[in-house]
Length: 176
Image (cartoon, rainbow, N blue to C red; front, side, top):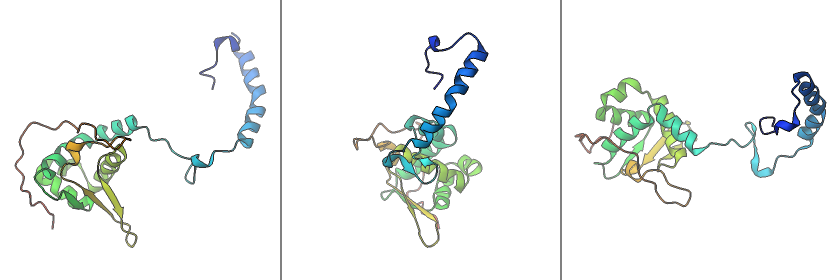
């Protein structure tokens, strides 16, 4: 609020500025109490709907293991006709075969976080939660990385760049 105020609104005296702000607090508090949040912005968790800016979600996913997961996902899923369907632990096993480094640095909880971020970003990753046990199942087509995220107009952006190195992986990577 104060950041966007014009300089002419304030005095060069800090004491005078503090006095003016203090004088406005009761009116501001009354406005907050009387203000009604529009129904489409009401949420149970924090009172208002959270804003997940796409750029911040992308940066967050890519800051950890997101980019590495995308690269290995592409190498692991591309040879498979049916893509992947299974738990995060099953996917982690398949990814570890494609990149032993992933197996050393990633656990199923971290992978779950990366997959959730990629899903929010628009990648074709479907998450289903089993109501009886609460476990999540992930489903994604073999071209999830090359299609890239889906835009609001239901078109795909260009997929994430992948490494040019050829990785030989058996198409039958169904974990047992």
